[in-house]
Length: 137
Image 1 (cartoon, rainbow, N blue to C red):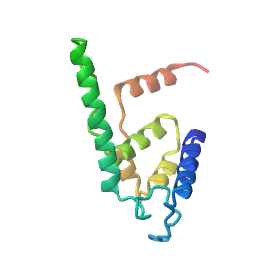
Image 2 (cartoon, one colour):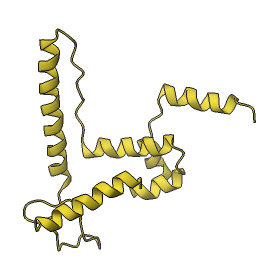
Image 3 (cartoon, helix red, strand yellow):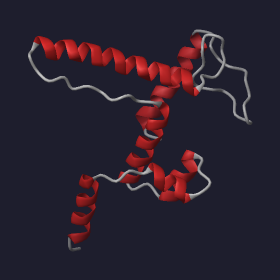
């Protein structure tokens, strides 16, 4: 895990502690959840998605107003969900050269077929890899 991500998760845990939001729940053997709701229950994917949808909606509203005021084309963000973030994480790890089996385990996949489905290859990535292969050692 990148250091910055770990720092942010530690900050979140500290915030939970300060605000009495620590969860006592155990789900499938997991406990000490990092993201909880006001009732101290682990956040469900639908709650995370609602947060993401609201962030995108608010940004797009502000960006549309800014673009209209400047007679410009708005740069809008597409709808983002927690599931899309899983695809993005898989793709970025793969682009950074993380071993495919490690990505598979990280995502909790039982087979490489599912992990392959999550890893999206762009034209830019293909060109970069072919350039890398073409370099002499």
